[in-house]
Length: 247
Image (cartoon, rainbow, N blue to C red):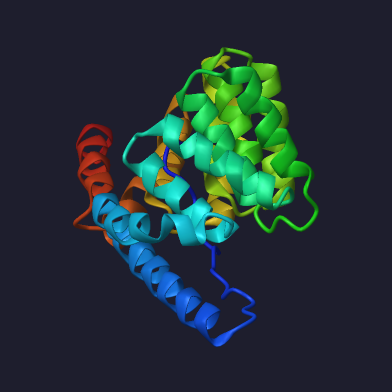
């Protein structure tokens, strides 16, 4: 998962000692808010235009540095993003989101040992609200290194952190499938469907899993459900193709 996870992130105002400081912090906050808005719209270069003019004044604000790191990451400037996230944890050592995103930067830079340490650190911070993210990211790293047992370990940990986190079920199912353990793969997908009953990717994979198990009628029922609930989706087109063959 390459994209950074922005959900739940929020900014705080500086604690200001004087009227002039308050004016400066409000300007910085306004720029950060605008930069965040453009980043969420997929326009990181516009975000950068709002952030760079105040870098000297905001250099000791961990939220500012975190946002700047996100912008650089979206621009695929991973070395610059890494430097920003590293600065964040110097300013605020328990900034869990920064540790997670630092791990993503290390992964992109192929510094895998450092990435693993960063993800582990993120998971260990007790105030982190979404530890399922670094657990998944670490599992994905191990998966890409073909260390399936370690990948499965962290995917299960991710699910323990948040049983509704569907990407972990999907990757775990994929690993079991690659190990020719179709029964375990399908069980993962069934749990994923419980976590998110209307996830088209899960439903499609589950129907295909039932086919591999020889459970034709269960597969047809899922394909029909996809077509009925999501008639204009790509998943529906695939499901229709299967139904033409199966019925």
